[in-house]
Image (tube, rainbow, N blue to C red; front, side, top):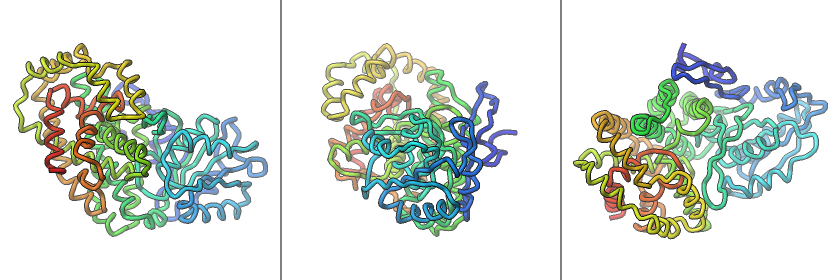
Length: 461
């Protein structure tokens, strides 16, 4: 029986020997998604195993409920009343902000409200609160639940937390939520743009899986076919139900939430976010950092991912129309000027530059000694790689139209950035993280600057 034959709860908390040769497990105790899912919360708590091996005891164990000023109104008060109705000892911390980023400061602020006897954290929210709680709970050795208030991102079931650290968006391996709860009626109350953000995060997986698979050909990177199929199945399930999402149908919202959680499970199976994140996420992270540096909140992560997916679709499509000269690419690679690159990184990344430069010192992504063997592998396997590119362009052809139906963004025009800033993002987003994907492929082939200019002129003309 493969992953596609199992229910979502059969995919968690059980170790599977995979055809890829590895063992996969997602350490999540329970998932409750659908109508009236919130009513299952007390039953989950009563059988929750704690860090010391005991089962939760309401007579001695205490709960911290975490919200912000928005999620407290949306569902926090309802969750708090439910917990008190069932006799749990619960304290509450509400972040006093209308908008906040997942960052070191939020983690420290939350830690200050941990107390003696705290055995379980229940967070009511979505991306920022989930990532902040996950990191703090992991380092405190305390299990946590997430009650989703919007199907806006794929991190509910993952084991990583992307946080702003030293001004750079950095992803940390942490722990899974002990339980994920997505009540369809609650999810239906969120703004349309948050549903669109969830769809944007989902559609980006077409690129993430394709880039992962291409890296297997180019770099001999490990790739799991079964995990890849699980992610693509989840994506297709959502794409097929976009009309239901537009109409806020409970079944379609359940599909979206389940798909976002399935992708989190896929990340947990691999241990990193590789099945869910590639160059479209690098662009999204760069956009998020730009907003922070400008003292703004910016767009939601999933909105950025959806927009970036549309751009990379266009770049792949343009690449397929070009004649690639591999000898010229090798010559360009040999001309790499580290000092010039560092100066450009300091100019474009500003406060985050030191972290990006430190990453280069470890991996040397543009070092000719690393680039030329990749060019050789691409030339040798070009027909195979070209077929993969054609496949992903076909799959993402409808991305812009689907996202528009849910108030998603499909171009950089609405971001308030200059042509130069967009060019910087497309040129240097690959340096945000050590993960081989589309933007690094374009660089290796010697066409990244040409493709970046093409996008800037197409949308910012």
